[in-house]
Amino acid sequence: MANNFDLAALALKSECPNNEILYDDKGLPSIMVKIPKMTYAELGLGASTATFPAFIVNGSEVDAIYISKYPCMVNNGRAYSLPGVGPGNNLNFNSAVSYCSAKGAGWHLMTALEWGLLIAWCENNGYIPIGNNSYGKAASESNYVAIPDNTDATHYALRTKTGTGPLTWYHDKTPSGIADLCGNVWEWTGGIRTVKGELQILANNNAADSDHSQGATSAEWKAIDASDGSLITPDGNGTTTGSVKMDYASSKLTYDTSISDASPGEHSCQFTAITATANISDAAKNLLIALGMFPKTSTIIPSSNQTVYWNNAQAERSFYRGGYYNTTAYGFASFGGYYDRSHAYGGIGFRAAFIQLPTA
Image (cartoon, rainbow, N blue to C red; front, top):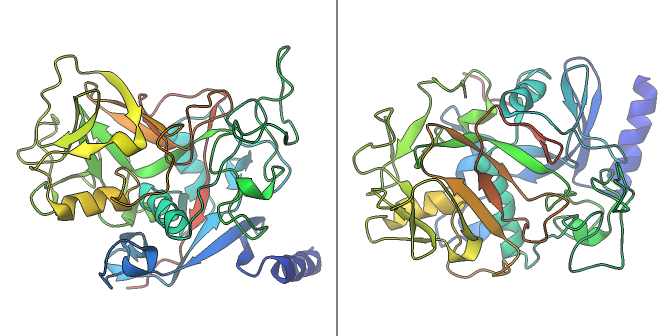
């Protein structure tokens, strides 16, 4: 079996140089895409040569992040990135975290910072991927239908098998790219949540290390200081003084230090419509951009078909990204924060990532 895996890895490398077959602690493979360490400047996010925070774990920089090439399937309680299979679905946030961390040290549920990294990379390289947001096809590319994973009486396809779409469904439009980031299934993302509309995250990319709990009562969750983008201890009620909160004003998501929303609860707008008041500093906005939660000034992300959803009333809401198979309003930059961590249905799945954790 090892020789077979070695031959497969050689064949993969010959066609997709930045792809690797990584093995979990049971010796089972996943196909991963290597993203080397980058700075803000290298990602087109200003002139700063500081390392993008997705590459900082436990206070140290890592050389690369490995992202699952495909939305993951589940086998024996573990996540695997493989082509031509049905994506895992109907699972809640805690299960997604568990399926990834069960694979061994450094394996984790893809984080918000890692999703933000891909948004920044795609924008900087001039292409935003599309995918299955219209029953087996991309709404803007109706002449191509991927291989169906499941169907209903009305549609040829609902979910599609991983990686069976055209190259336009890969983040770099090449066979080496990351597949199905847009549509098919929403993907839970780690390291981010809201508490009554207050945005909370884990420091840097510490959500990549399972020693940092993402449980509902974890002390790892921090609010964002609107004045300078630093992390502060939340008050537990979503009312931390000076923290970044998701308000709803003028029919769009507006980041502010308080919520003036007359009818707090479920809201939506387009990703490119998201704005912030003068209370949110440039440093805080830069962190929001890094998290994939705020559009940068110059953007190629379409102004439509990138709907975002959030809930600024409930005690805790988790986030998922990318849209799913039955609504053309969703795209690569879409996020949802309607539901709590226990929510599960057939349109939501997940993707694993791997980081070689820094040693002490």
